[in-house]
Length: 470
Ligand code: SAH
Ligand code: SF4
Ligand code: F3S
Image (cartoon, rainbow, N blue to C red; front, top):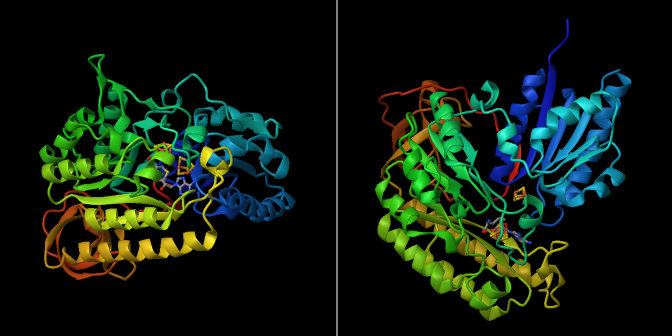
């Protein structure tokens, strides 16, 4: 009798890597594998990596060092272990990684996941050191089975669906255009079909993903090019779908239809991640962001007119080459004016091969650190204030899993805050009204009134991801 083999995937980086890991599972599980949450007993181990900031590659090499011990131990027990590295570090390092880490059997870039079955077969036949990092002309999504595996869907009532991948914007600090390739939008019908299947399996909340999601321009059933706004109106009608989100948007691509959708569609949650990176027009130009602060303020104004309670989030980079005290002060001023519900902020990290890495006006490390703590203190203050405003309100919470304490569940508010409440397990997968009684900087808690339970779910096992935004 042959035992079912185990597949373990560790995911680093952004939400698209989380989605990609699920899709890799979708192609590999039908070959006779089951998911394992444990690296020690895996027959195939895949690290799905991120290259966005420094030490990303080093982290992967040190993880490979740990894995080598597991592989050796298994080999001495007569077991084989296939080690794969996927994602943006695989794409960026290529041959170099195979030379430096000979335990890696397979390197596969983000555009080649559909080739995994064939690559695994070759390894089983004795080949080693396979490299698949070309950007192929064929569409990877067309080659991945449409149906999502039951094991993946059972993870909970929220799901990601990639609608757009790659980026043509070439911000001077960013590796994404090199690791993900140029912009590609999936056809509308494929996205509607994937969403329909997920919702028929009980998924309630779909987050559409793209490195530049609002630059989406997929072919519609009418043969026209559809914008993201138009796609959202279509998806809002999918049976069973209760909540829609999308990430990450570029300020230049927030068009009128998309903004109107925030006012029109109750399914579209009042939360928008709209990275600005800096509040200085000089730095925005050096970053090649292609927008000014005035453009950003205008988008913020229009989106707030369409949906007054919208929660705004952003990404910031401090210490970009040439950033003076005055430039940083402009960033602080922008943050004070916009008032974010939360935001991510990073020290500028020179990435090999990107134009900003070669600029000769690099900012000293201690200056970057000081600016980062000042910015983060302000952002934390704003996040706390936003949460404080929810005190005493009744919010509809989509329960996604068990909380830390017995009898407690955790879920998400429309504004993407984690919310804890005592509630029966059957409520996982349903939206319930929760009266907010306590707020912290990172989460809220409250009392669940109970009510109609629309469906149930297994608790979601944590996805092993060291998150960053898309
Ligand atoms: N597509 C998104 C960003 C994708 S990368 C956008 O256009 O905004 C996610 C975030 O990582 C970026 O918003 C940026 O804040 C940060 N980031 C990217 N490259 C970086 C670098 N070299 N150093 C520091 N932060 C970086
Ligand atoms: Fe593209 Fe965003 Fe990277 Fe700019 S920051 S190059 S828009 S992915
Ligand atoms: Fe790649 Fe996402 Fe990281 S696109 S570099 S995995 S942030």
